[in-house]
Image (cartoon, rainbow over all chains, first blue to last red; front, top):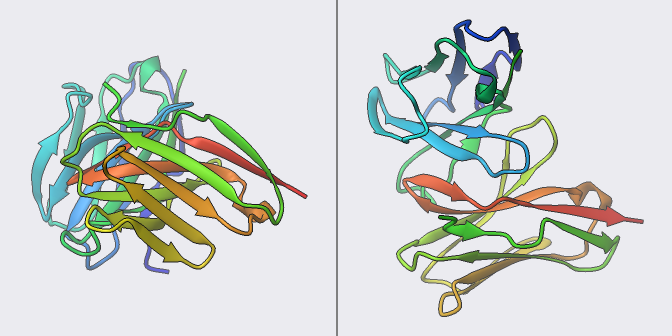
Length: 115
Length: 109
């Protein structure tokens, strides 16, 4: 299966710790997106890359959050000094711009719980 | 400021009947709309999309209708099946996706 993969699927951490998530997009997709979803809400955009360039960041992405896509393939999302409000599902998606309206395909997500 | 709205948090439909999920948007510049289905603890799964130059798109049991003058779209599922029970999100696409808050569909026997 060559869909979007995310690791880990679940992460439990204590407040103040750093966490890092990984996303592997569909291989031929040059755009990669990060979203966050909390209970009762739709996914909210965090940031996206075209190849290795980070093209947009949401104001939701505070200074404690950083995302990278160093070789234009996989991406990592790091949260430093986690807070309880960071508890959410973190979703990654990938796409080919211009193809069918830039339809994005999502991975299974990483569920973060901050104690 | 909610640019994409799903005003019905839940919908219950009998198996075999039609399910109609609604979505409203505010920005007339949006040019593409998508519907995703989400099961608990999984990522959203793409279902069907529609370009703003069309008013209808059909794929099997799923049909999406777009009314640009009313800034409204709807997803029709017919016939509904128990496996369709999930949360459905509509989204507009302008580089990034802007999602509604979702409608939980339950299809009962």
